Amino acid sequence: MTTNDVPQVGSACCHMLPSSTCEVVIMKSFPVHTIESAPADSRASLEALQGAFGSIPNIAGAMATSPVLLGSLVALFGKVHGGSFAEDQIQTVLLTDAVVNSSRWAVAFHSALALQEGIAVADVDAIRAGDLPNDPKLAALSLLARTMIEKRGHLAAKDMDQFLDAGFDKAHLLEVIAIVAASTITNYTATITDPPIEAAFRQHLWSRS
Image (tube, rainbow, N blue to C red; front, side):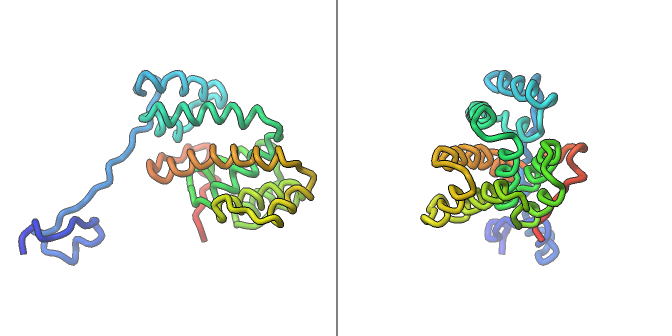
């Protein structure tokens, strides 16, 4: 057998092959850009996020390699946070989405923001555990967001009725799609680029149990 006959393998498998035939594939890491290091077309977006958060979240620095991706998030970010939902409601959806999508960075980040927005610790813990919060309106939002992702948007009439019966209207239901879209950008990017979790959010580290 020659090295050309051996498929590339990860380092965990190398002990099973002779060293002369082991080819290790190392996943290329993605840079976490600053405003200075980012592509020119990403800098305005990073500056906007720095203005919103006081610093640039690592996920945004990781996105900055693609100005199209980062610009899409910033535009959607503005729409979502300028919409009809209160910030605690938005964070409920974003945290739910992060859990459903198993995005470790996003769960830590949105756990911190959810608590900052006054969501009860018990409700944050429930969402992180895959359960519903006690607050009835937040529970309706969380359930709808989870169902949208799990069913890939194929909601049944009862799924929509449960949400509407909690005091929301059809415009709210459609607006949740925008929040889910924003979280899809961050969740998928975090999974692919695996940015480091900032020190401020490490107390909220999460893993699927």
